[in-house]
Image (cartoon, rainbow, N blue to C red):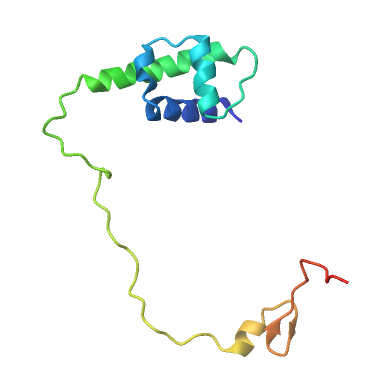
Length: 121
């Protein structure tokens, strides 16, 4: 797994498990613990890299906590969602001959496909 993917996963685990209380600088043992929670295997020597990455994430979280958000309503979306699907209206479907014309192999009006399992004896 690429380092950026691991950093993202480790950051999610840190915030999900409320591990911000570890402080702004994570130790190698704490990084190994977070990696274990995320079910990620770390290569030898990667703890320092991820300690720096996760400590930076925790620093940003602490900076965000300084903001006054009392007047901001909780929301799951930053922008309103709109239903963009068309109405489900019955329409004429394609005729069988036109559909079967594109089939690599057809028999009696059905597609012929290779079996994916062999018949049991």
